[in-house]
Length: 371
Ligand SMILES: Nc1ncnc2c1ncn2[C@@H]1O[C@H](COP(=O)(O)OP(=O)(O)OP(=O)(O)O)[C@@H](O)[C@H]1O
Ligand SMILES: [Mg+2]
Image (cartoon, rainbow, N blue to C red; front, side, top):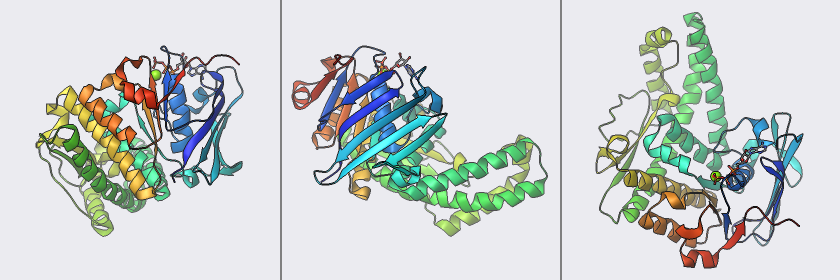
């Protein structure tokens, strides 16, 4: 059986002096007025499960104003094993513990994974490439500690290189750093591309379902060393050695341009991810509804891949998304939830929920009654 969360407890986290929820089942609906702290609960659970927050806040902001530190705990159980995930936040630092013992972030990845879906995720369809790359890396990081560590190493090298270019450091220094950039960059590109192949296939299947088979979705990963044409759906495949060689030659070809523009232009931080519906680029051609379908397909693909690869269902965290989806898309989402995946949904308004869903849910009203 899969691990699921049975209990959460926050102390001095965000707006909460205390927040406790016990006997948590498969479906919890958190309902309450604006600013009552619904998203804070979602963020707290995401921090405990994915070790990250979709809000990307400065660490200190997570601690309740005026309090010295915050403590978040979630108990998870599969009916057999019992786990305690804990996060302590103090003095601008996060510290994760598993069953009371301090652990590195990388060691916690994938133990109780989660998929978070918020209105901000609509940026995946219409926002910048950085949002798409970050979403892919966030998924990869939950699926593989190596993906997480390689990305971290790559970002470190990239920051260093950008600093050198900005300071107009001697070319020899930049070139020496390119060695490291090629090594980490080729690894990251390969991790991403391998994962992306699976994401693209799962997304296409979900999209066909959501759109009743009337439209075809194609997702493409375009590495920075390839010419990128947003009008054309193209697929690239490469291995580690191809990636190394391609990065090396693109870096030397564009070294002058990088110096002139004083920033790194080649590497996985400049890779493109494009979505096409019936061969037309979603960013420029898709309607709002189509864009929402693309994002929903991405989220469902995420959840499916986590389950397939980790053999552990993720916790689904849906922050205020029912009102963003029309009836057909809501149905697709509700059908997915009914497939027995632990889910937390927040909303200011229960009108968007159908009676079947509500009858299966535990509805928690915020603010919680005292006592
Ligand atoms: N570190 C903090 N200390 C105290 N309060 C905080 C802290 N961080 C956030 N808050 C407060 O939490 C509240 C927001 O909570 P949250 O975003 O969870 O609301 P919400 O219920 O999701 O609202 P909405 O329905 O508008 O999305 C805000 O009033 C904000 O000021
Ligand atoms: Mg909110």
